[in-house]
Length: 633
Image (cartoon, rainbow, N blue to C red; front, side, top):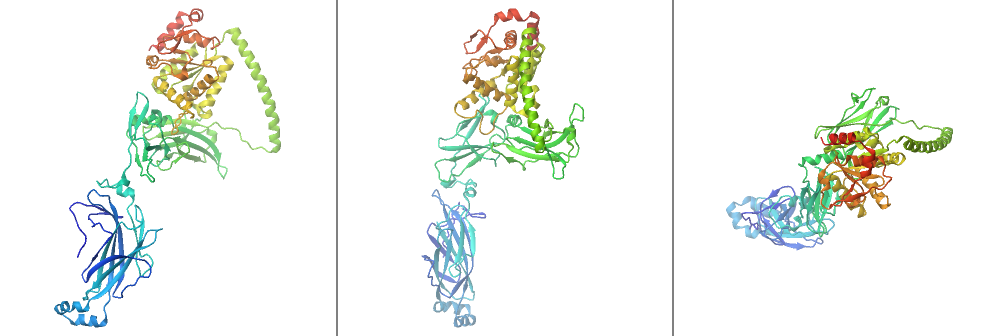
């Protein structure tokens, strides 16, 4: 008889394909082919097995399938197909050859032989389990028969298990099968009851007004963020992500924290969000170095890092005494998506080298990004003197260095004294450092226009937008420290331009700094001059020096009406609304912040400066009208 049942709707997930068929739920079931009858199956110990000589196992094949029925939980089934060789005595064989089919059928009962075979399986590191299949051999002219054995819930078999199958006489595996993996089963999206396939979900909403991405997930759900699908995953405990650190390649990985071996899901919901591509470009850095090859040839090294892997081209260029960096032919290299590595800061890094290049041309590096058709550069490296000295030269250099240091200290002292005397005697104005907000592309004309105007009024002005090359060499924080040193020596102020985005970013940064972090997001540190200024403003506040070096300006009337008023980090700093308060700003900058300004607070908490006396004594009507006409455009 045949023990398989086939309902109308079913499925079986095998290790190599998907079949359809139901298996009757039982520990084990057996089906025998023609020539065998009275088939039974029973458990058998793997040692001391006695078997008849009437049948031998010639071949064994097996597969592991997932058997499901209605809404009941699914179970694994091990299906073994065994091909048997039937052996009969010489007397029986002669009678079969000489008998007709009718005579053979009539005498079959007298020639039947009881026989059995034992089939075993094991899944390392468990012990083998065996099933003894007993049957009656009905002698026929056919010497081959088949036995089909189905074992439900085989011992030790789970998702992805390796199962070895063998007949007991062999005592070693002759077949190997692989159970379907959990991901293979769950990826079928079939409506079946498999509790292991459950995985929590996370949804995301971009809130551009608050400059953040809001996440929604269950309380016991673990979430981690990673740049690119194969990137390093970092645990994320909060339900918001700052928008400036979100890029199209950012992916979210979630799993259930209550499970011992949870299954994870990965989603990348920002792939088609085009406006987030600017966050990749703003966090892209390129560094350039020089070196020598083993054959003493010269080479130019370059290092490109970004939150996402990029495609494009890189090539060297030289100035050749002109005002434009011209490509050096024959060195162009491709940026491929598959050759990047991720560093400990979760930034994707691409390294490259231009060999046998003439460094006398002061070569720089240009970058073209395929997505957005964006050209960046040139990024240059200032050639430095070679440090190859013997012991005597090092000793001489040490003496020269100490002498130069003493002269430098004396020179700085004389320079400070002369500078102060010059300022008192001739009324020279101080040094102004103009710092842009993070969304500088929206207001670059106002920032640069303010810098040009202050310069025309006799101030020494340094705008961060004019000093990008110097920032690449020094870094944002060292560059800002060097500018504040000029402010200290010459008098003046650092002027921070505010926008609505700048206020949100400052609030976020200050909140993380108070929580014990470093003020940056773990995934994508926003290391620009604006962030460096926040570090110094916080340091002045903690040291009781609020307002000595920094003041605030804004071209955006909405900033003044921001709900909640002045952020805690900026409390105590003066805020000037331009262009209406340009004359007041000029007066404050001219006196270098050495006297404390009188002012008043608005209903939103902003501190406005009046300085009426300064208006009357310092600036003419012609200056005010020029300022207003330039910034009201």
